[in-house]
Image 1 (cartoon, rainbow, N blue to C red):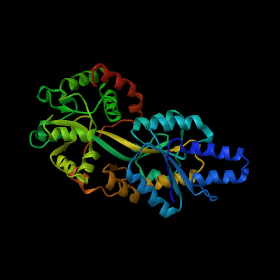
Image 2 (image 1 turned 90 degrees about the vertical axis):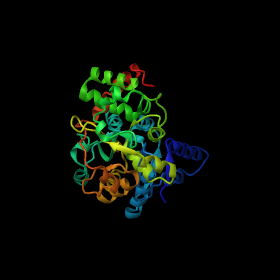
Image 3 (image 1 turned 180 degrees about the vertical axis):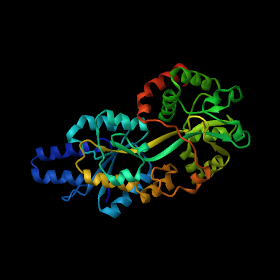
Image 4 (image 1 turned 180 degrees about the horizontal axis):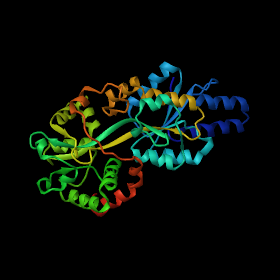
Length: 360
């Protein structure tokens, strides 16, 4: 049966084994107990996943993988920063086989900190196009999400919308809703604009956005959608998958909100909509490397991709995967042509620009 952990749990269990050994427990039995507690077997049919993605569908995918392969998937959860720092600290003794997170910048951060290694699999290369893989294959995408403009269907016509930059125009004064500057999704959007438009132009954009805010940034993406429908603002910047999840929510109020907002993919005549990524990397000191690669192959394969995207409403990375009906309704769209490493490179500058603009 697959076991589920939070960051730090494995370290605690190893310390417990040490104490038992010191108290006179037979050393061999203690070591066997430690292996049992990490879900391993003598055949080593286990893979330890350090994950910063806290989605139920991931848990379900791991269960399906275990059923098909007999390989037990152990989840060790935490924030991306916590997990990367732990992998660095533990070095060769780390139990991590895979690292999963959202955001291309965070994936590059893990790579630059030396906690990942090259994924060598022709299956994975065939599943995921090069533009959604690290140039050195230290990580690959498992799903993507666009950061778009959501608008009130009863007050805004799609033809009034065009680009992220145009949200600073006078017609949107007091009508723009968005999350805080501390939100990673916003930081990566701004980082992408720095990479594409330069610092000066992006600073002007951030200033103009703040001038047009309907309120001080508050809440998550779902809250921005709710505020649009409540009439607090007319447009909001949010990720596409939230709309899909709200439309399929068990909460009738969320469904109603999602039904009353439209989705607009900006910058279709210029640089394209901002597309970010959820990805998976092979840990530098993976002790179950073959099993880890098998899990990557499953998650990026047609079956795994359809299972993932039909529940999360992210976009699949595998072009052979059937796209959920809702995503098909939104149609095809142009995306930014950008090296995901730029999101990490310009993250600090993006935060500085937003702070300078008084983007709370």
